[in-house]
Image (cartoon, rainbow, N blue to C red; front, side):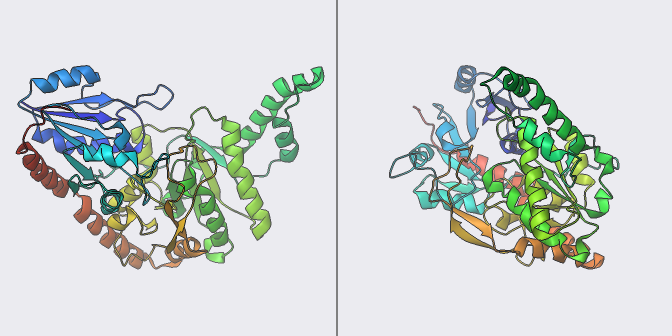
Amino acid sequence: MKLLIIRGDLQSHSGYSAAMRDYSLQLRELFDRLIGVDIHYSSDRPYERCPFPLVSEPEARHLSEHADFALVLSMTTPDCYACYPNCVNVGLTFWETDRLPLQGAERSPWVAQANRMDALWAPSTHIKEAFQAAGVVTPIRVIPWPIRVPPPQKEGLPNGEVYDLDRSPWLSGSLLALARFREPRFRWSRWLTQHGAPRAAARLLARLRTPAHRIPLPHERALLCVAQDVPRKGLLLLLSEWMEFKRQSEAKPWVLIVKTTPINPQTPKFDFVIRFWEHVQALKRQLWVDQADVFLWTGNLAAADFDRLLNNTFGQVAPSLGEGFCGPAAAALALGKPLVAPRHTAFADYIPPDYPYAFLTRPVRVSFVGDPLRVYDPASTWNVPVPYSLAGAITRLAIDLPERRAEACRRARIHMHNWCGPDRVHALLEEEVKRLAALPARLAA
């Protein structure tokens, strides 16, 4: 019996979980049995059922002992890799920058952990180069994420939690001040803190909230940005460049939808939404922009609703300073939609060199203050957009002739299919599994 064991984040809406589903579709045909071990499960995160049976780590080790050939694929960072005895152990990691975390050492501990594996699969050329530059000597094979094409959906946007960041409700300044009131010293101030502040916060959020169907002409004029709210995703930078774009007359009909969630699920909704609202309001004042047309889409969507959101928006914007996954951006290319994005890190594999809506970036050593992930080395290089280049790329998209846009999207779709189409990835995996099956068995882990 040929057994495949996939370890990682298997039951959430994370990038790893989405990639696992697509890789498993290609791998399951090469094995007699497929099981999973969820090593990152958390009840605080959105749940999505794993498409194959899950077992515990001890049970997976026990089953591997009775298989004729067992491949253990750890889809996670190297500090969570595992080596099973008498099995072929493979690591697969998505990584966004040029340096692996040192964690106080002269050399990243991830290097030793990666070198214990029989093989590594890199989803992009950038990841292979980053691991090799760090000192990893384990054979690395580039096997792209076989990103699925979102199926056709009914027209219109799904229902969701949407906030119009353009609005400036009556008494919004007073409501904001009261919502942030914190003074526990006196009886009256404690009452105001406990009762007045929550009511003011709820009132302000209610005035900003809007139904998704109120977004004008999303299929013709809405650009979508899908990214978690972490510093490297560059969401606040995107808003700044968007406002530069909105100063032009050509920008009037265009709308930006920012689909994001906080990295910490315990973040209060008020704090999360108001941070973006204040940023947009400040930019409107500074740049003399009357109408920003920015909508913040928070909360989690079911898979079908997310596909509907991708299908029924005009295109996408990806402002990330470093990218390992490229999932939503690649989905836009697969759908034949325009994508405004840079050509660094993993983007470079998915976007053709002559793509007209790519924007320039420059490498900068940056450390993110207050980064909730706390994993990146402080000397990591990130790719910061050249000032006004992102706004310029959006402008090129907005003013381009429809036939030129269609031709650029057609070429980009072909390029992406040649890179990570299911047939190509299946052939790569089949060849790699045959090679690994011929390796001598590892007797000890």
